[in-house]
Length: 174
Image 1 (cartoon, rainbow, N blue to C red):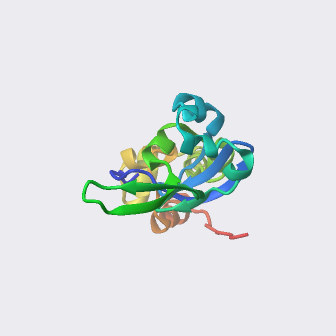
Image 2 (cartoon, rainbow, N blue to C red):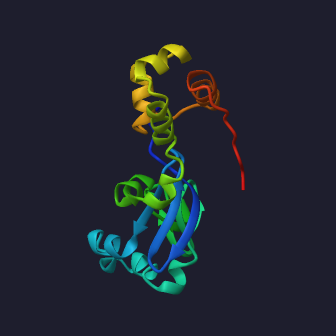
């Protein structure tokens, strides 16, 4: 898996159910943010602006702005020391969101390519080392893929499936 040194950013809201937001991050993960817990942890009641998003009607107006969750209807005027003012929508730091979210197991499990490769390798009766040798890669890389610790490029996946395992790779978009 390529290391992501940047802060994970939100790229899509999958669903809003009550005070839970299901979203996709730019690192490929789908995560769930439970705002009922976040409201308490971050003491939203102490801040008049934050309290507004505790209203279910306003909460549902969430959108993505600057790769984070934003509520355009909840606004604040910020005045700088220079005298310049800005009218900004309420948003949350994407790192705070990421750190206070949980993996969306149901959505993430759909793409467990590693488990499929491991199962097919074991059915073929070959070791990780043997598969790696056939594909021109390392046993360590095969292990990382099988344990879903590494992303895999389509070319590499094709090489593992078709050359290493002697199977046919088919992709389908629904």
